[in-house]
Image (cartoon, rainbow, N blue to C red):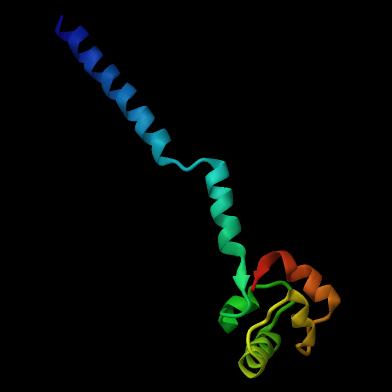
Length: 101
């Protein structure tokens, strides 16, 4: 009887522990949506390091973006980035899905 009770306690403990573990784990859809939001960079507020995280944007171009927005004001359309020296159509295509204004 004592062994049966011990087995039931262990079994009950395992049954209670399994749902807690699965609840604590984010689903793949939740993890994917959080990553997508975090990948977007606001070119009007981003630091030089954040801008350098964009494909095709190095230190010099990142600084030019910051200098341009400081002098001319915030970007109002993604095409405004073409006015920054060092950003051409191909670079804009690479970064357009990773930026917000």
